Image (tube, rainbow, N blue to C red; front, top):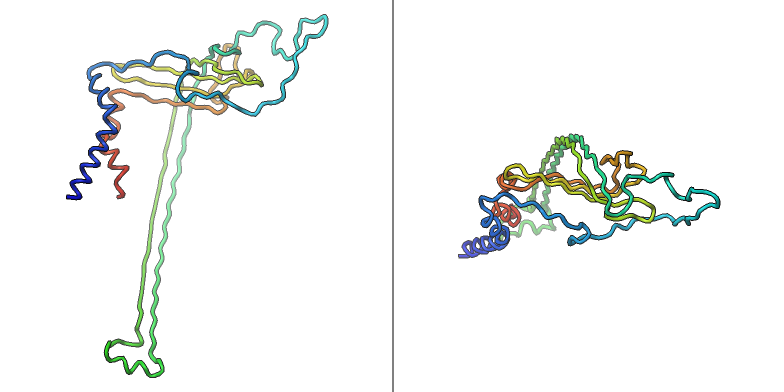
Length: 245
């Protein structure tokens, strides 16, 4: 009875967790995945302005009889991204490879033995409970553990994505965020780029490499029918979480 009750509880929990997503998936059977609407990134839930350590601001003043302004980086108009809402292209180039292998082995054996062959002659009077005084306690234990792990990872992503300047920090650095979605048949591939860039690192053609983005957040993935097949079922995910073995 208890086993049946526990199984019903787990089944109800899994159904509750999958209820919201399952209803939408059933409604969209046979339909292509919808693209996300284009909106202002600063109005999304969870958006917070970036706060970083800033240097002291330098006062800006014009010299007499001069067209040059103190603090300017160029004499003519710079067409590169510099203000909130400007666009720039991020060249994403990731070529990482990591290979690690660890092995751990541990063993321990303990043996304890205690006896009282002579105890003021009392050992001869142990008649009610017959025992061997020379072997009162004998305990032994063995413990061993072995573990191994291996990581062999190789990633190669090369693409371009346009990003929007969402914030200009007091020292001139800019916070950018870009999102790209590509739908092929019933699968959507997503590329998200966000971070902090320096105006000096932006090339003359308004392109910046991803390795020059500070606090970079780059995500490349997808959603759709192929991604659903590659994921375990909701029930299996719930069982993996709640089962202790």
